[in-house]
Image 1 (cartoon, rainbow, N blue to C red):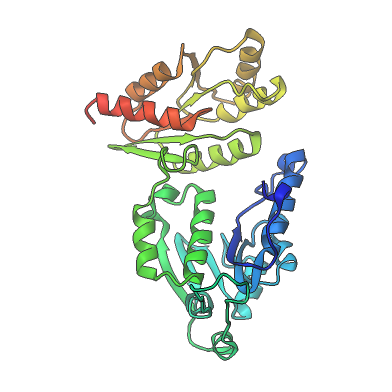
Image 2: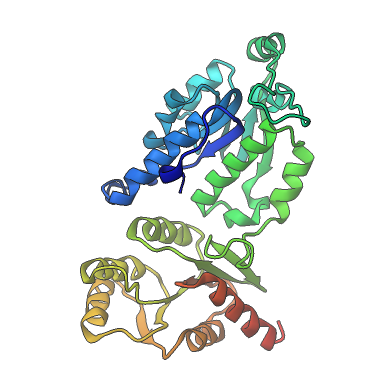
Length: 343
């Protein structure tokens, strides 16, 4: 929509871009990526010069947006020694990063919330003011500038830090919140309680904690997001991973084989929640068995039966990954099963 319709230039107070393709080559070659890249450029130009834009310093395809925007740039990164982030920090400009399990902001970002005056009575684009004397003081101060925000283990959305893409989202959201003047107390309280539930953000790594069992519902539709998701799920070190998946009917047979290879890295069981044609099922199985210790594959007549089966088989310490073509409906079925079991 943004790439097609556009946005007015230099009008918004704040903006952010987390990633284009997560540095995945197959995604970068996809036709839709060109539209996404164009949308990012439009967003960057839409931020007022006295506003700010939050950018991912780990993604080269996002870094270039700093040149597209007249706004102040806040960088975030998963490592404190990211070269771009390091230069930002050395220049005492706003930055936030992930360091040994903790989200850390520099003093420039913490103080940045006082830089803007927003006139709520007007919508004119010149409604911002940036106190230059205060800005200069922030960038030349000499006291220690590292401020711990929160340990990621306290933020359930990150699954103890295993979901690195969610850690990136936390970094981005925290930078936006600080830049908009939200207090650390409010930020910490929100991060400790927020979960992307299926009714709030369907398919966006929805988490359900059932005693010591974790159910993760995601609407991944392509190979690069699936690779990232599985990598993070395995890093959460569950006892076993049970996967409920649909047939990815929009993917080619070759890509479905790759889906099987990716999912075949799990240590539990794969349950297919819908009928597949013989050729597509064979391609999926071929991908699964490419792994050294492939999991068992079980076909189920429908999604409710697959979910009922996996929630019956899973034990404390296991993780159930549900790949959903309709995340909202899937989340509702999971909730009904849990409520029906009296848990």
